[in-house]
Image (cartoon, rainbow, N blue to C red; front, side, top):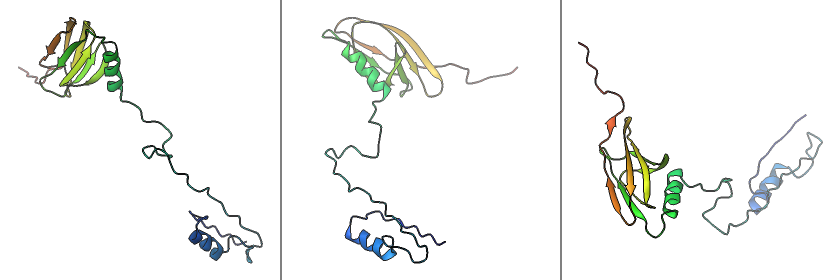
Length: 156
């Protein structure tokens, strides 16, 4: 038995229909004795919002540090204080009360209160500091990160 399979991406277009007819897919095949069925593809619908793709099932997700930063800023209120976080070396990950909020240098608008700030560097350096923030106060936190493990070992 002879079986022929053809794929046409646009069977609704004139060119696609010509290809289908030329291939003999919509008529009885003399060699096989059976009729081949054409798989039809519905025409594409235009999207109202060009920024959304019909191929992506998941919606755009916000990064955790942005969500954590926004949560802190929403709780800040009208007497909010500011934390300016810097580190040496810069680019350290910033954790406020255990939540990742970004990388240094970073300016946070937060509610007055006590915060545990932890900075983690790319080479396992770290610094931890407790910060008390008063209403409408701007506090600069700029620790030097220290290595968690020794970088040199000497034997005597």
